[in-house]
Length: 336
Ligand code: AMP
Ligand code: MG
Image (tube, rainbow, N blue to C red; front, top):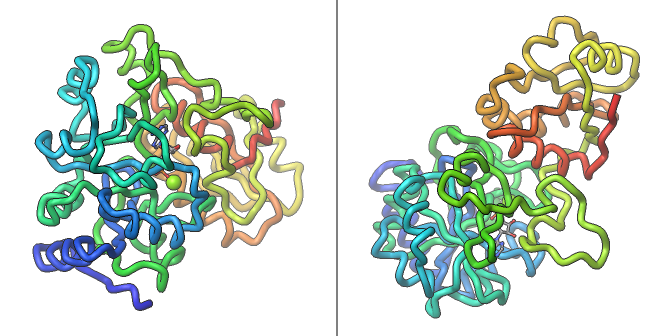
C-alpha cells in the first residue's frame, strides 16, 4: 500500500481522522515516541496494527484519549488513586492499567480484563483523537523489536508501505515510552519506568511496588505482569552490551577493544578512540532519554560488530533509560 505523508496541520489531521474512522492505521506524533494509531473500538483496525508491526498477539496496546469524557468509554472503573494521578500527570507520559470498559475491542488488551490508558500532551495527537471522536490504541510506530521511533523519519524507515499514513511532525520531546503503572494490582505496581519517575509516583502511592521485570530478565515459565516486558526490544542490528563501570574504566575498556563503537556520556567523548556516539551528560537522564533510540538506530551506520553502552544511573528518569538499554542489550551486562 502507499503510505500517505500528511502535514501536522488541520488538513492533515482531518485526513488522518477519516482514515482512522474507516479502520485504517496512521502513525502520529506523541510526546513520548511516535505511535501507530487505530480505533480502539475496532478489532479489524487493531489486527492491522499487530500485522504492520509484526507484534506478538499477546502484547496488549495502550489506549490514548483526548479528554476525561472519553475515559468512561475506555475503562470500567476509575478509582480514587487514578483520579489523583490523572490530576497530577495528565495530559502527559503516564499510562494507567485499569479494569477494561466493554466498548474497547478485546484484541487491544490481548484478551486481558484490564486496559492501559493515557492522555498524551502532544497537541497533534490530542487533536487527532478529538476530531476522530475515537479513543486510539497506539503502540510505538516501529517494527516490533527495533528501537522506538522518535522522529517521523524512523517511522518511514520501518513502516513505509505497511501503514495508511504518517503525520510528519517534530521530534518527540521525551523520547522514551510512557511510564506504565498498574492500579488493577494490589498493591499498585510499576510495570515500565518512564519520564514520570517511581519517586514521583510514590508521592501519591507510597506502597508502589517496582515489578521485578523492570531490571531483571524473567526466567522461562515466570508470568509477566506486563506481557511486553518478556520480549527482546529496542535493538539495533549491531550487538549491544551494557557496561557498568567508572568513567576511566569504561574509556580504557572500549579503547582496548576492536571492531566496536561506544555510546558514552558527553564528558568521556574526547578520550574515546573508537567510533563514538554521545548519550548526553552523565547527570542529565532527560537528555539521555531523548537521544537514546536515535543513537541505537545510528549505531547500525557505524558498521562495527559490537556497541558498548556506558550504563546510566538507575534512579529518576535514569531507571527508564537503563530499562530500555538492558533490553536492547538482550540482558548482556559487563561489570568492570
Ligand atoms: P507499547 O505500546 O509498545 O508502548 O507497549 C505497551 C506496554 O504496555 C507493553 O509493555 C504492554 O505489555 C503494556 N500493557 C498494555 N496493556 C496492558 C495491560 N492491560 N496490562 C499490563 N500491561 C499492559
Ligand atoms: Mg513498543
